[in-house]
Image 1 (cartoon, rainbow, N blue to C red):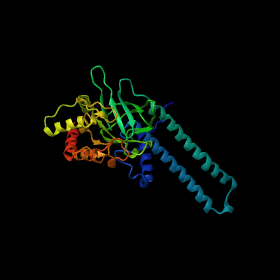
Image 2 (cartoon, helix red, strand yellow):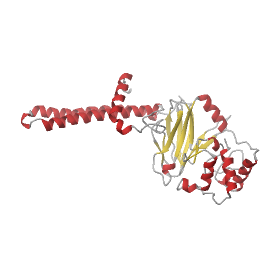
Image 3 (cartoon, helix red, strand yellow):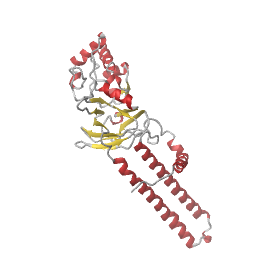
Image 4 (cartoon, rainbow, N blue to C red):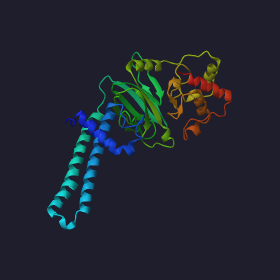
Length: 339
């Protein structure tokens, strides 16, 4: 069954009408985490369905108001029983049923498109949800190493992407509002989601299923790029870190390995191969740290190392406030330098 065909002028008129009617309640629904400001094909389909549902609700509400006013203001003695029955049955039963059925059919026709897998050969990205961060992996092949990062996803614009979603502990929900709908991540299962970004920019993703104490701090950044820029970025992410010559950075590297950080974190190009925490190979080149809680600056790395649990209550990583100030400074500088 083909989706209901709607002309562009009709779509624009409906969206303007419903936007004007609901402006007081949706004035703040814009920005990098808005379902009403779509930047993806799937999000645009969901937004279109939303506007049609709002329009249908407004029409039904107006009809009910007209019927109520008519019933109140018309003299009961002037009521014609047959005309009154037609008003009630037609406006209160038939009309809402027709509108709601039309919206239901329209919505159901979108489902196959929203759950369809990406075409063969599309980019695949593996995302694991953990308490309370995201492990993101771009699989390798015969000629390329895999690239792994945390709490950040980069996508090429205009191309469908297949997400393979898993959870390692509790139920999470993967959601990038500006690009598409949400989907649960259930331990022991792999769920799939196809998203097709339609414009470049930086967007925000979140866990949409309560998953524990730091649930509100389990976010991630999504950067949509032109294909050549994306290819260059991904090629860089596949590379191990290079050894820095600056004394402060060398000290930070030595401290990272000697203080046990490598037991939880991987930094490719070093002896750190831990898998409990995020891969930090190119952490300095990401847009934020601690699952979008802090910006990516040296001072923020220092704050994270010193007051970990205060910054993100419930986080499983211990704080390192017991280290001398100069050691925390060297660690922060080295981590920020891992571009």
